[in-house]
Length: 165
Length: 173
Image 1: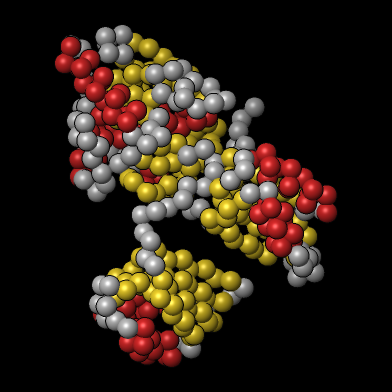
Image 2 (image 1 turned 180 degrees about the vertical axis):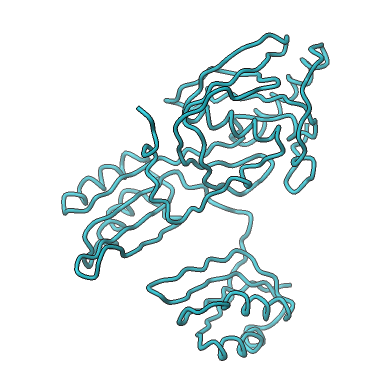
């Protein structure tokens, strides 16, 4: 599948919830995952990035060394039920080529979502994985990391300053 | 739109410089690429990529009224306009300490030897007039790995400079 690129207006749309958990959905998810893995360094993808305005996200950061990971997470109709801590980190997006910028995200999150069979699941994510999940869920709300950029300059913001014990 | 130029403008800061300058360039049919404006010690400075069919001389003439009326200085160089080839940095280094001559040279020299390719550098002087402090933030690519840079920084920090190095792990989603 082709990745659509900003400023395509479809990236600004709010996605609808999925309510049919059928073979068609599973086929779409397989293709979406292939598209994510074909992208340069892509560790996550959201359905709106291929022009399908449904609440479907895939995140898999397991290829990165030394970070906490749940493997390949299929998150359908996801919802952040808890977050804490803030950190600045660098993000890029397959829908925004040749640009990376700093974004503030929660350091630890809990996300509830359905899997491709419609079963409820819950993940507690932190760090890089939590960042990826938040980035992808933003896509479902029509938000890009461009909408959350903070300056690269004056970055005297220590990563751990706002961390709760 | 054949030529790319690097237009550098410096002078005493005042309100409206960027607006006047970019208006003149736009009216003259120029296109802007990447640009960076900074206020350095109260002075205005900007570097901007300008794309135009004008010769260097004609571009100079185009901005001359604005430059003269605002008491600025301009410098123009022909450049290669290499857009869409950003290098993604993988390390960020924060340095701070009591201000004294030689900090940048010492730190950057050690880092360069340890394989740092700098993509972005900014420094600031804070503190008070009596006790100024120096703050430097560098982003770059650790060609020989981050550990090599860590070792280099350890040696430099023995001289009363505080420094830390963070990995930039860019999340692409």
